[in-house]
Length: 374
Ligand code: CMC
Image (cartoon, rainbow, N blue to C red; front, side, top):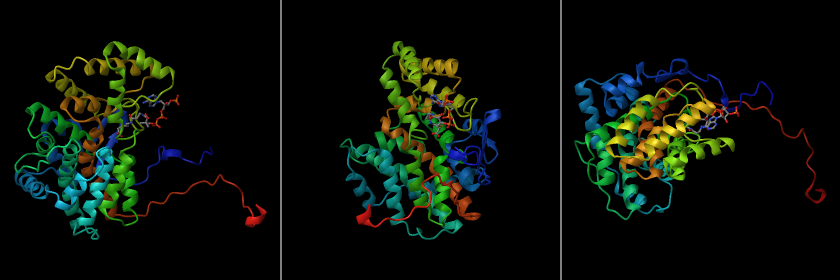
Protein backbone atom coordinates (compact mmCIF):
# COMPACT_ATOMS: atom_id res chain seq x y z
CA UNK A 1 0.00 0.00 0.00
CA UNK A 2 1.41 3.36 -1.00
CA UNK A 3 2.26 5.65 1.93
CA UNK A 4 0.07 8.51 0.77
CA UNK A 5 -3.04 6.29 1.08
CA UNK A 6 -4.57 6.71 4.56
CA UNK A 7 -6.67 3.53 4.68
CA UNK A 8 -9.55 3.84 7.15
CA UNK A 9 -8.70 7.59 7.36
CA UNK A 10 -6.34 6.57 10.17
CA UNK A 11 -5.08 9.65 11.99
CA UNK A 12 -6.69 12.10 9.54
CA UNK A 13 -8.37 15.22 10.96
CA UNK A 14 -11.22 16.08 8.56
CA UNK A 15 -13.06 18.96 10.29
CA UNK A 16 -13.54 20.88 13.52
CA UNK A 17 -16.31 20.21 16.05
CA UNK A 18 -17.53 21.82 19.27
CA UNK A 19 -19.68 18.85 20.32
CA UNK A 20 -17.30 16.43 22.01
CA UNK A 21 -13.62 15.85 22.56
CA UNK A 22 -11.94 12.47 22.90
CA UNK A 23 -8.55 12.72 24.61
CA UNK A 24 -7.06 9.24 24.53
CA UNK A 25 -3.81 10.19 26.29
CA UNK A 26 -5.61 11.17 29.46
CA UNK A 27 -8.57 8.80 29.01
CA UNK A 28 -11.00 11.66 28.81
CA UNK A 29 -14.22 12.35 26.94
CA UNK A 30 -16.06 15.66 27.21
CA UNK A 31 -19.42 16.79 25.80
CA UNK A 32 -19.43 20.55 25.12
CA UNK A 33 -16.52 20.81 27.58
CA UNK A 34 -18.04 18.76 30.43
CA UNK A 35 -16.42 15.44 31.43
CA UNK A 36 -18.84 12.55 30.87
CA UNK A 37 -18.14 11.18 34.36
CA UNK A 38 -19.24 14.51 35.84
CA UNK A 39 -22.37 14.50 33.66
CA UNK A 40 -23.17 10.91 34.70
CA UNK A 41 -22.91 11.85 38.35
CA UNK A 42 -24.95 15.06 38.24
CA UNK A 43 -27.37 14.92 35.31
CA UNK A 44 -30.19 12.88 33.82
CA UNK A 45 -30.01 11.67 30.22
CA UNK A 46 -32.53 14.36 29.20
CA UNK A 47 -30.23 17.09 30.57
CA UNK A 48 -27.31 15.65 28.59
CA UNK A 49 -29.43 15.32 25.45
CA UNK A 50 -30.39 18.98 25.82
CA UNK A 51 -26.71 19.92 26.28
CA UNK A 52 -25.66 18.05 23.14
CA UNK A 53 -28.43 19.57 21.03
CA UNK A 54 -28.42 23.11 22.48
CA UNK A 55 -24.74 23.59 23.45
CA UNK A 56 -25.56 24.46 27.10
CA UNK A 57 -26.96 22.56 30.08
CA UNK A 58 -30.61 23.47 30.70
CA UNK A 59 -31.85 25.39 33.73
CA UNK A 60 -35.01 24.13 35.48
CA UNK A 61 -37.51 25.85 33.22
CA UNK A 62 -35.61 24.93 30.03
CA UNK A 63 -35.54 21.29 31.14
CA UNK A 64 -39.25 21.36 31.96
CA UNK A 65 -40.01 22.76 28.49
CA UNK A 66 -37.72 20.18 26.81
CA UNK A 67 -39.36 17.28 28.66
CA UNK A 68 -42.77 18.61 27.69
CA UNK A 69 -41.68 18.78 24.05
CA UNK A 70 -40.56 15.15 24.24
CA UNK A 71 -43.86 14.15 25.85
CA UNK A 72 -45.85 15.91 23.13
CA UNK A 73 -43.81 14.26 20.36
CA UNK A 74 -43.56 10.67 21.64
CA UNK A 75 -46.63 9.28 19.87
CA UNK A 76 -46.14 7.73 16.45
CA UNK A 77 -48.67 7.86 13.62
CA UNK A 78 -51.16 5.03 13.08
CA UNK A 79 -49.44 4.55 9.72
CA UNK A 80 -46.04 3.94 11.35
CA UNK A 81 -47.55 1.70 14.02
CA UNK A 82 -49.18 -0.41 11.30
CA UNK A 83 -45.90 -0.58 9.35
CA UNK A 84 -44.07 -1.76 12.48
CA UNK A 85 -46.81 -4.34 13.17
CA UNK A 86 -46.38 -5.76 9.67
CA UNK A 87 -42.61 -5.97 9.73
CA UNK A 88 -41.29 -9.54 9.59
CA UNK A 89 -40.91 -10.84 13.16
CA UNK A 90 -37.49 -12.22 12.27
CA UNK A 91 -36.25 -8.82 11.03
CA UNK A 92 -33.23 -7.49 12.88
CA UNK A 93 -34.34 -4.57 15.11
CA UNK A 94 -31.51 -2.43 13.67
CA UNK A 95 -33.09 -2.84 10.23
CA UNK A 96 -36.42 -1.89 11.83
CA UNK A 97 -34.81 1.21 13.42
CA UNK A 98 -33.34 2.21 10.06
CA UNK A 99 -36.73 1.79 8.41
CA UNK A 100 -38.80 3.62 11.05
CA UNK A 101 -36.58 6.72 10.86
CA UNK A 102 -36.88 6.59 7.09
CA UNK A 103 -40.70 6.37 7.35
CA UNK A 104 -40.70 9.31 9.78
CA UNK A 105 -38.95 11.23 6.99
CA UNK A 106 -41.90 10.48 4.69
CA UNK A 107 -44.35 11.76 7.29
CA UNK A 108 -42.53 14.83 8.64
CA UNK A 109 -43.89 18.17 7.42
CA UNK A 110 -40.39 19.72 7.62
CA UNK A 111 -38.51 17.01 5.68
CA UNK A 112 -37.27 19.27 2.91
CA UNK A 113 -36.56 22.23 5.21
CA UNK A 114 -32.92 22.21 6.36
CA UNK A 115 -33.04 25.49 8.32
CA UNK A 116 -31.54 25.35 11.84
CA UNK A 117 -35.02 25.75 13.38
CA UNK A 118 -36.55 22.97 11.26
CA UNK A 119 -33.57 20.71 11.91
CA UNK A 120 -34.00 21.15 15.67
CA UNK A 121 -37.73 20.42 15.43
CA UNK A 122 -37.04 17.28 13.39
CA UNK A 123 -34.21 16.17 15.71
CA UNK A 124 -36.57 16.36 18.70
CA UNK A 125 -39.28 14.45 16.85
CA UNK A 126 -36.87 11.67 15.79
CA UNK A 127 -35.42 11.52 19.33
CA UNK A 128 -38.89 11.33 20.94
CA UNK A 129 -40.57 8.95 18.47
CA UNK A 130 -37.88 6.34 17.76
CA UNK A 131 -38.14 4.68 21.23
CA UNK A 132 -41.93 4.42 20.79
CA UNK A 133 -41.58 2.72 17.41
CA UNK A 134 -38.84 0.38 18.65
CA UNK A 135 -40.79 -0.57 21.78
CA UNK A 136 -43.77 -1.32 19.52
CA UNK A 137 -41.60 -3.77 17.54
CA UNK A 138 -40.19 -5.23 20.78
CA UNK A 139 -43.74 -6.21 21.72
CA UNK A 140 -45.45 -6.97 18.40
CA UNK A 141 -42.83 -9.52 17.37
CA UNK A 142 -43.65 -11.40 20.59
CA UNK A 143 -47.36 -11.21 19.76
CA UNK A 144 -47.97 -8.67 22.53
CA UNK A 145 -50.12 -5.53 22.46
CA UNK A 146 -48.37 -2.22 21.81
CA UNK A 147 -48.11 0.03 24.88
CA UNK A 148 -48.25 3.75 24.06
CA UNK A 149 -45.94 6.21 25.86
CA UNK A 150 -47.05 7.62 29.19
CA UNK A 151 -46.93 11.38 29.84
CA UNK A 152 -44.75 12.47 32.75
CA UNK A 153 -42.35 9.52 32.62
CA UNK A 154 -38.69 10.23 31.85
CA UNK A 155 -36.96 9.02 28.67
CA UNK A 156 -35.55 5.82 30.20
CA UNK A 157 -38.65 5.10 32.30
CA UNK A 158 -40.87 5.46 29.26
CA UNK A 159 -38.78 3.00 27.26
CA UNK A 160 -38.99 0.35 30.00
CA UNK A 161 -42.72 1.04 30.39
CA UNK A 162 -43.41 0.69 26.64
CA UNK A 163 -41.33 -2.51 26.37
CA UNK A 164 -42.34 -4.31 29.57
CA UNK A 165 -45.57 -2.62 30.71
CA UNK A 166 -44.05 -1.77 34.10
CA UNK A 167 -41.16 0.10 35.64
CA UNK A 168 -38.14 -1.60 37.22
CA UNK A 169 -36.56 -0.24 40.41
CA UNK A 170 -34.85 3.14 40.35
CA UNK A 171 -31.31 1.73 40.30
CA UNK A 172 -32.01 -0.09 37.05
CA UNK A 173 -33.42 3.08 35.49
CA UNK A 174 -30.36 4.98 36.70
CA UNK A 175 -27.93 2.44 35.18
CA UNK A 176 -29.86 2.52 31.88
CA UNK A 177 -29.81 6.33 31.92
CA UNK A 178 -26.03 6.26 32.52
CA UNK A 179 -25.56 3.95 29.53
CA UNK A 180 -27.54 6.41 27.36
CA UNK A 181 -25.37 9.31 28.56
CA UNK A 182 -22.21 7.36 27.71
CA UNK A 183 -23.53 6.29 24.30
CA UNK A 184 -24.83 9.75 23.31
CA UNK A 185 -21.83 11.17 21.49
CA UNK A 186 -18.30 10.23 20.48
CA UNK A 187 -16.86 12.62 17.93
CA UNK A 188 -16.11 11.42 14.37
CA UNK A 189 -16.87 7.70 14.76
CA UNK A 190 -18.07 5.71 11.73
CA UNK A 191 -21.80 6.38 12.09
CA UNK A 192 -21.35 10.09 12.87
CA UNK A 193 -19.01 10.48 9.93
CA UNK A 194 -21.62 8.71 7.80
CA UNK A 195 -24.27 11.18 9.00
CA UNK A 196 -21.99 14.14 8.28
CA UNK A 197 -21.06 12.77 4.84
CA UNK A 198 -24.74 12.37 3.88
CA UNK A 199 -25.48 15.86 5.23
CA UNK A 200 -22.58 17.35 3.27
CA UNK A 201 -24.49 16.90 0.00
CA UNK A 202 -27.17 19.11 1.65
CA UNK A 203 -29.39 16.11 2.24
CA UNK A 204 -31.84 16.05 5.18
CA UNK A 205 -31.64 14.84 8.79
CA UNK A 206 -33.86 11.75 8.30
CA UNK A 207 -31.64 10.55 5.44
CA UNK A 208 -28.50 11.19 7.48
CA UNK A 209 -29.79 9.35 10.56
CA UNK A 210 -31.11 6.47 8.46
CA UNK A 211 -27.61 6.08 6.98
CA UNK A 212 -25.98 6.43 10.40
CA UNK A 213 -28.12 3.59 11.78
CA UNK A 214 -26.96 1.35 8.93
CA UNK A 215 -23.39 2.25 9.82
CA UNK A 216 -23.83 1.69 13.56
CA UNK A 217 -25.22 -1.78 12.95
CA UNK A 218 -21.86 -3.31 12.04
CA UNK A 219 -20.08 -5.42 14.70
CA UNK A 220 -16.94 -3.28 14.54
CA UNK A 221 -19.06 -0.34 15.76
CA UNK A 222 -22.35 -0.41 17.71
CA UNK A 223 -23.15 -4.02 16.85
CA UNK A 224 -20.35 -5.04 19.23
CA UNK A 225 -22.58 -4.89 22.36
CA UNK A 226 -24.78 -7.59 20.82
CA UNK A 227 -21.74 -9.68 19.86
CA UNK A 228 -20.39 -9.44 23.42
CA UNK A 229 -23.56 -11.13 24.64
CA UNK A 230 -23.35 -13.77 21.91
CA UNK A 231 -19.78 -14.47 23.04
CA UNK A 232 -20.81 -14.76 26.70
CA UNK A 233 -23.61 -17.13 25.74
CA UNK A 234 -21.12 -19.28 23.80
CA UNK A 235 -18.81 -19.36 26.84
CA UNK A 236 -21.86 -20.53 28.87
CA UNK A 237 -20.26 -20.69 32.34
CA UNK A 238 -17.36 -19.05 34.19
CA UNK A 239 -15.41 -22.35 34.34
CA UNK A 240 -15.17 -22.28 30.51
CA UNK A 241 -14.13 -18.65 30.19
CA UNK A 242 -10.34 -18.92 30.60
CA UNK A 243 -9.93 -21.73 28.03
CA UNK A 244 -12.46 -20.19 25.62
CA UNK A 245 -10.79 -16.80 25.45
CA UNK A 246 -7.27 -18.27 25.20
CA UNK A 247 -8.41 -20.48 22.32
CA UNK A 248 -9.98 -17.49 20.59
CA UNK A 249 -6.75 -15.52 20.88
CA UNK A 250 -4.66 -18.48 19.69
CA UNK A 251 -6.90 -18.64 16.63
CA UNK A 252 -6.34 -14.86 16.14
CA UNK A 253 -10.06 -14.14 16.48
CA UNK A 254 -11.30 -10.59 17.04
CA UNK A 255 -12.85 -10.46 20.51
CA UNK A 256 -15.89 -8.20 20.52
CA UNK A 257 -16.10 -5.42 23.08
CA UNK A 258 -12.33 -4.94 23.12
CA UNK A 259 -10.04 -2.47 21.37
CA UNK A 260 -10.72 0.95 19.96
CA UNK A 261 -9.48 3.02 17.04
CA UNK A 262 -8.78 6.07 19.23
CA UNK A 263 -8.35 4.79 22.80
CA UNK A 264 -5.37 2.49 22.97
CA UNK A 265 -4.93 2.68 26.77
CA UNK A 266 -8.56 2.22 27.78
CA UNK A 267 -11.97 3.64 26.88
CA UNK A 268 -12.85 6.62 29.13
CA UNK A 269 -16.47 5.43 29.38
CA UNK A 270 -15.68 1.95 30.71
CA UNK A 271 -14.96 2.61 34.43
CA UNK A 272 -18.37 4.29 34.90
CA UNK A 273 -20.26 1.73 32.84
CA UNK A 274 -18.48 -1.18 34.52
CA UNK A 275 -19.44 0.18 37.96
CA UNK A 276 -23.11 0.21 36.96
CA UNK A 277 -22.95 -3.22 35.29
CA UNK A 278 -21.56 -4.61 38.56
CA UNK A 279 -24.42 -2.94 40.49
CA UNK A 280 -27.02 -4.48 38.19
CA UNK A 281 -25.30 -7.86 38.39
CA UNK A 282 -25.62 -7.68 42.19
CA UNK A 283 -29.26 -6.55 42.10
CA UNK A 284 -30.12 -9.41 39.71
CA UNK A 285 -28.12 -11.92 41.76
CA UNK A 286 -26.11 -12.80 38.66
CA UNK A 287 -23.42 -15.37 39.37
CA UNK A 288 -22.46 -15.99 35.78
CA UNK A 289 -21.90 -12.97 33.55
CA UNK A 290 -20.05 -10.95 36.16
CA UNK A 291 -17.46 -13.72 36.50
CA UNK A 292 -17.16 -14.39 32.77
CA UNK A 293 -16.72 -10.61 32.35
CA UNK A 294 -13.78 -10.49 34.78
CA UNK A 295 -12.01 -13.57 33.39
CA UNK A 296 -12.21 -12.53 29.72
CA UNK A 297 -11.13 -8.98 30.58
CA UNK A 298 -8.11 -10.19 32.58
CA UNK A 299 -6.89 -12.48 29.79
CA UNK A 300 -7.32 -9.75 27.15
CA UNK A 301 -5.37 -7.28 29.27
CA UNK A 302 -2.62 -9.71 30.41
CA UNK A 303 -2.08 -11.45 27.11
CA UNK A 304 -2.77 -8.73 24.54
CA UNK A 305 -2.87 -5.45 26.49
CA UNK A 306 -6.17 -4.72 24.70
CA UNK A 307 -8.68 -2.87 26.90
CA UNK A 308 -12.47 -3.29 26.95
CA UNK A 309 -14.57 -0.64 25.20
CA UNK A 310 -17.99 0.64 26.33
CA UNK A 311 -19.84 -2.17 24.52
CA UNK A 312 -18.27 -4.79 26.82
CA UNK A 313 -20.18 -3.85 30.02
CA UNK A 314 -23.38 -2.67 28.29
CA UNK A 315 -23.94 -6.04 26.56
CA UNK A 316 -24.39 -8.19 29.71
CA UNK A 317 -26.01 -5.27 31.58
CA UNK A 318 -28.83 -4.91 29.03
CA UNK A 319 -29.29 -8.69 29.13
CA UNK A 320 -29.70 -8.65 32.91
CA UNK A 321 -32.22 -5.81 32.53
CA UNK A 322 -34.37 -8.11 30.37
CA UNK A 323 -33.74 -6.79 26.85
CA UNK A 324 -33.40 -9.20 23.92
CA UNK A 325 -29.82 -9.35 22.63
CA UNK A 326 -30.70 -7.96 19.21
CA UNK A 327 -32.19 -4.87 20.92
CA UNK A 328 -28.87 -3.78 22.45
CA UNK A 329 -27.66 -1.82 19.41
CA UNK A 330 -31.08 -0.18 18.85
CA UNK A 331 -30.80 1.10 22.46
CA UNK A 332 -27.47 2.65 21.40
CA UNK A 333 -29.39 4.28 18.50
CA UNK A 334 -31.97 5.85 20.84
CA UNK A 335 -29.16 7.68 22.60
CA UNK A 336 -26.80 8.44 19.68
CA UNK A 337 -29.65 10.21 17.80
CA UNK A 338 -28.69 13.21 19.96
CA UNK A 339 -25.02 13.18 18.89
CA UNK A 340 -25.87 12.53 15.24
CA UNK A 341 -28.41 15.36 15.21
CA UNK A 342 -25.92 17.82 16.71
CA UNK A 343 -23.32 16.81 14.10
CA UNK A 344 -25.85 17.11 11.27
CA UNK A 345 -26.73 20.64 12.44
CA UNK A 346 -23.04 21.52 12.82
CA UNK A 347 -22.33 20.22 9.30
CA UNK A 348 -25.23 22.23 7.85
CA UNK A 349 -24.00 25.37 9.63
CA UNK A 350 -20.54 25.27 7.99
CA UNK A 351 -20.87 22.85 5.11
CA UNK A 352 -18.22 21.63 2.72
CA UNK A 353 -19.01 18.65 0.50
CA UNK A 354 -17.12 15.60 1.83
CA UNK A 355 -15.41 14.07 -1.14
CA UNK A 356 -12.05 12.35 -0.53
CA UNK A 357 -9.76 11.03 -3.25
CA UNK A 358 -8.57 7.50 -3.97
CA UNK A 359 -5.39 6.18 -5.50
CA UNK A 360 -6.23 4.15 -8.58
CA UNK A 361 -4.60 0.69 -8.58
CA UNK A 362 -6.62 -1.04 -11.31
CA UNK A 363 -5.84 -1.91 -14.92
CA UNK A 364 -4.01 0.67 -17.01
CA UNK A 365 -5.84 2.27 -19.95
CA UNK A 366 -7.33 -0.49 -22.10
CA UNK A 367 -8.96 -0.57 -25.50
CA UNK A 368 -12.55 -1.91 -25.67
CA UNK A 369 -12.83 -4.99 -27.93
CA UNK A 370 -16.10 -5.47 -29.78
CA UNK A 371 -18.39 -8.15 -28.30
CA UNK A 372 -17.67 -10.73 -31.05
CA UNK A 373 -13.90 -10.29 -30.50
CA UNK A 374 -13.96 -10.97 -26.72
N1 CMC B 1 -9.60 -8.68 19.61
C1 CMC B 1 -8.43 -9.19 19.24
N2 CMC B 1 -7.44 -8.48 18.70
C2 CMC B 1 -7.66 -7.17 18.54
C3 CMC B 1 -8.87 -6.55 18.92
C4 CMC B 1 -9.87 -7.38 19.46
N3 CMC B 1 -11.03 -6.86 19.83
N4 CMC B 1 -8.82 -5.24 18.64
C5 CMC B 1 -7.61 -5.01 18.11
N5 CMC B 1 -6.91 -6.19 18.05
C6 CMC B 1 -5.57 -6.35 17.53
C7 CMC B 1 -5.59 -6.38 16.01
O1 CMC B 1 -5.78 -7.69 15.54
C8 CMC B 1 -4.24 -5.83 15.68
O2 CMC B 1 -3.29 -6.85 15.85
P1 CMC B 1 -2.03 -6.99 14.86
O3 CMC B 1 -1.25 -5.71 15.03
O4 CMC B 1 -1.33 -8.20 15.35
O5 CMC B 1 -2.62 -7.13 13.50
C9 CMC B 1 -4.00 -4.80 16.78
O6 CMC B 1 -4.81 -5.20 17.88
C10 CMC B 1 -4.38 -3.39 16.37
O7 CMC B 1 -5.74 -3.39 16.00
P2 CMC B 1 -6.36 -2.64 14.77
O8 CMC B 1 -7.33 -3.54 14.09
O9 CMC B 1 -5.30 -2.00 13.96
O10 CMC B 1 -7.16 -1.50 15.44
P3 CMC B 1 -8.20 -0.60 14.72
O11 CMC B 1 -8.02 0.73 15.31
O12 CMC B 1 -8.18 -0.68 13.26
O13 CMC B 1 -9.59 -1.29 15.14
C11 CMC B 1 -11.51 -1.87 16.29
C12 CMC B 1 -10.35 -0.88 16.19
C13 CMC B 1 -12.54 -1.31 17.26
C14 CMC B 1 -12.18 -2.05 14.92
C15 CMC B 1 -10.98 -3.22 16.78
O14 CMC B 1 -10.36 -3.05 18.05
C16 CMC B 1 -12.06 -4.27 16.87
O15 CMC B 1 -12.38 -4.92 15.87
N6 CMC B 1 -12.66 -4.49 18.09
C17 CMC B 1 -13.78 -5.38 18.23
C18 CMC B 1 -15.09 -4.72 17.84
C19 CMC B 1 -15.60 -3.75 18.88
O16 CMC B 1 -15.60 -4.03 20.07
N7 CMC B 1 -16.07 -2.59 18.42
C20 CMC B 1 -16.60 -1.53 19.29
C21 CMC B 1 -15.77 -0.29 19.18
S1 CMC B 1 -16.02 0.93 20.45
C22 CMC B 1 -17.64 1.31 20.65
C23 CMC B 1 -18.42 1.54 19.42
O17 CMC B 1 -18.03 2.28 18.52
O18 CMC B 1 -19.47 0.94 19.32
